[in-house]
Image 1 (cartoon, helix red, strand yellow):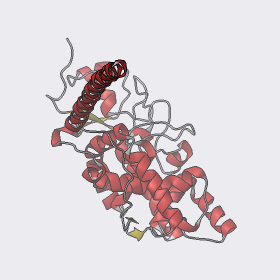
Image 2 (cartoon, one colour):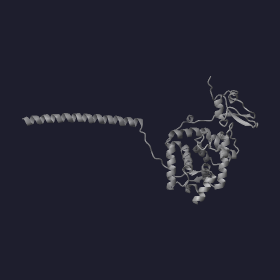
Image 3 (cartoon, helix red, strand yellow):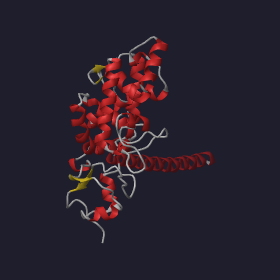
Image 4 (cartoon, one colour):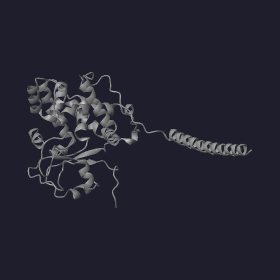
Length: 313
């Protein structure tokens, strides 16, 4: 009887234990189910590899995308620039502001439209200065600027003038195309200099950009441009969605001609119901708060149309 009694007690304990275990497992399953449903409702963050386009070209010149080295290099630039989402979005927003200025100048000089993406790769469509002191949207060095007729001094630096600097870039690229016979090599020469490309062609006994072993920056250069072209031309393909009002737009302006010294641009701005900051935003090539202009040169200063800026009191 003792064994029967003890056996019954043991069975009772095991039964209660199984109930408790099932209860815990049920709670865990319910909690897991709630978490999964929450994740499904909120959406899971996933990172995907990118499909490389079957065909690519730069300025009408085919990219040898079937070459394994070329595929890896374009894949790298597509990944880097797609998953740097904040930068890509800013480039898309700025493109609507600056491409309408750049495109007609390229067309006027017979430069393929794809070269607007060179400006994107160079500066991110901003008036920046590189460690080598290359300046502006097109990253022009002081010696090159002066060689092509841009004014660069303490008062005025026309490398910051988007229209004039675009024209200089066009002239440089046209000469490079005449030298190399290829728009792709012309783009590479814009980064490395014509002499730099020629030296490598002679050293390596190769003429095609995609056959040359170049330094880190120039070796990536055309691939960065290609990636910018691909992503900005097909934003939704790469997961970017922008509404029309998300893009930046240019403010309409009119020109005021000045052929004398300007002693104070803050006073000058007030005549047109704007302030010094707004004047400089539209004329970043004016580098000082004044203009000496001893030569009585004619300058065209852009003034925004009324109604676009509200000044503080």
